[in-house]
Length: 276
Image (cartoon, rainbow, N blue to C red):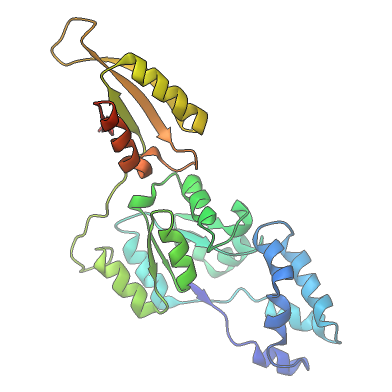
């Protein structure tokens, strides 16, 4: 949403290509997908587009088509306002050339982090793309808003607990950010924050150790057991047993599974805490 590309038609007309030929060749799934997930570098993908077109002038047309685009000034203004209130990261389906494009457009300085599909090895709208992006950013889904002009991408974000919003226009993006208190003059809205760490507090050592082993076997980490004396008690027997959890099996923060952990603790007369 931060950049757009002018129409392909003038390039196609100038090089004797049928209208729509560049997009049909360039975005054929068998060509673009490997480039978007980092399996092949950008230059290999573009060379394959030239080969697919297979007409005189194809190389010159693809070279001209390989422009970095142009900045959407209205969207950039919204990003700058949002950055006063939160970190802003760019998650995009792009080839290995993305860093150079952003540098040329000056957008590399306009966001706090960039996560591309070529870097993480999977593209939107797959929920796994969002899980991996969260791990790269070390952020929890419950404290994250994701805006995209593609409805399927917003749905993919929502599938992992992110506040996914379909914003097909700059006006829709302005409305979404304003409703969440992220723009100048908008009412302050506090985004829900999901604690990364969850402490499973149990009264019985045997339960704590058994549950910790079971969780560790499932992929939770670190699933370490600690003894915690009860406040105001000197008796070493007056203690709770704490299972420390930082990440769930899918790599997301343990706090993103808080409801399930709450239920697990209640089954054993315990409770959960975020150590806050």
